[in-house]
Length: 183
Image 1 (cartoon, helix red, strand yellow):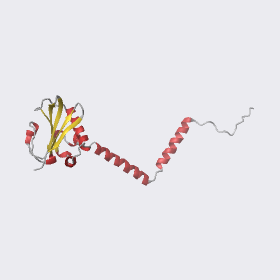
Image 2 (image 1 turned 60 degrees about the horizontal axis):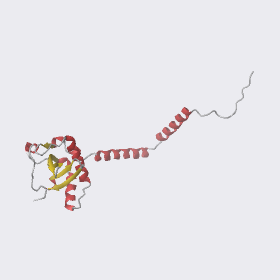
Image 3 (image 1 turned 90 degrees about the vertical axis):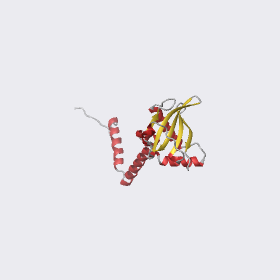
Image 4 (image 1 turned 45 degrees about the horizontal axis):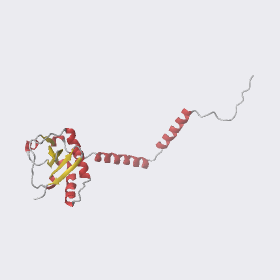
């Protein structure tokens, strides 16, 4: 009969078992978090969700498609993709205006407070050989009938409710921002 001699040294660790034990240990620590820590994590996730939803708000999402029109009265007709890019660029311009004019800054602040309340007309124009999109914003609540979808809306005064800006599709930049004055 053969005698088996064994030492008191443990066998080598099974790599799969070691991974399983490590994961189980981490999971236990997550499960052991107290309620206040879990509440903090949930509040943080909720705040991030709110910030993300605000980050996508702006002219390109606030002005419904029914309040946008491309007029054919221009020298060329901008595409839907070009007008969408124009709205995104205009939102960027409004969020960080390059002007030092305090009156314009105040008007832009008012515009940003009312982005959902506008209609916009897009007109393809050519200035100095460059194709630009003239964007004409006006208050949706004003009664222009269906004419606003066929003819340019021109209003004297009216302040921040009536403003215009040009978008250069080749450069992706906004030019010539102007807000109407007040009577």
